[in-house]
Image (tube, rainbow, N blue to C red; front, side, top):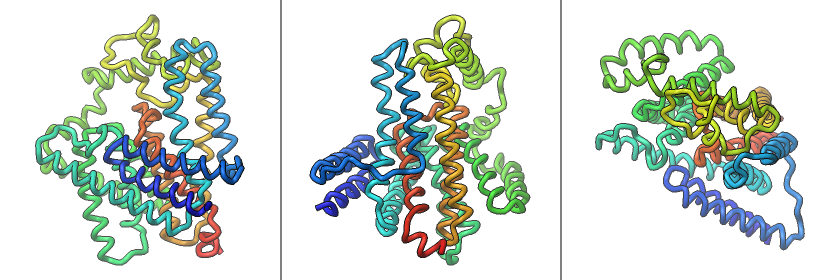
Length: 393
């Protein structure tokens, strides 16, 4: 009976991954199926225990910090409604860890995810040729660009260092060229920077000597790009460094200033989740121009303003430990291709956090859930007895 419910839970995850680039409704359906099957399984077995993870104490601390921000929240209804944005990815994480799928099942899950990404990548190319200004697959452009950049980190890792034959390497190379082109067509400046930063980190960890070759490739690309890439994309990239005329950049600076002032006045537990937009428009926090006041365009400053010191520190501890764990898995793993998977996953989390320096992506439902899916898969692989027997010895 337990195996049956585990199969249903995995089926739910397959549905969820199918919807990763297609529809939030499909994603929710898949997670709903998994959660319902998991709850019924626990009730039938009269069991409430969940597989423990090294991250439990940090996750609990972070959730407590979020709840503590509700104390004297400026809008408690807003805060309560927003909490699910943080809870659902963590529930996804524990569902997958508790099922503890085999390596065969993990491969199947990753193949489905790979297929979903390819489908969305094809959509983005059709959008480009149809004249869409910023390609987005079938989801919000920022989330599409983020997930695409994660995908590219894995592709590039295996192209450069994977122990694979020539034909697969060529196929991955072609997909990387298409993916990088599509990433450019999204015009998402923050994702571009985060992608480059995480790629540099991956190269630095793997082999510092490759940084010189990477720099040469970047210089060649910079020299050739104006000849092959339309001006609108070149101008978009150049605008990253315009802090006087570009309203988007100036808005970010003003939002960061305002977030720091809010944190100064509410440094213990913040103003409560999802209340930033209501407070930033008030004196002395508001400063023109602010094209948008929906969020702080920075994960850390948003958390500081809304959850105070407790929330900010707990978030840093949580992801700091996750990064450390991924790095340890990478260093200890002897299976070469699996070692690269850990390395690319480390780069993915870095990319996610780096993008969070210029954008508030903790609320992103597609990206946030995928990040915790990746964390769960890496944790399972790192602790798997099958993996230990085959790889680490």
